[in-house]
Length: 88
Image 1 (cartoon, rainbow, N blue to C red):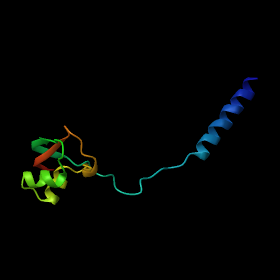
Image 2: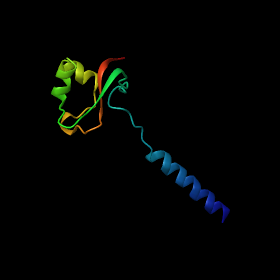
Image 3: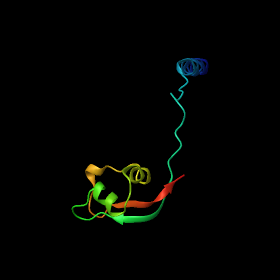
């Protein structure tokens, strides 16, 4: 009975090793973006990204750089937006 169990374990090990495959990334691992906000603004009723950009004299490019994951179509009251800062 022990021989049968050992044979089963060896067979299981061989099948596990033979079906294993290597998984590789399709490209380089992205480096996380880090933002240092030095000033923030809480969204109020009626605010839009364009209105905040104009309020703080920001270009759209700069506003998007310091708020990289922002969805301007889904702003909500109380949401904090970075109005001054830098990326590193």
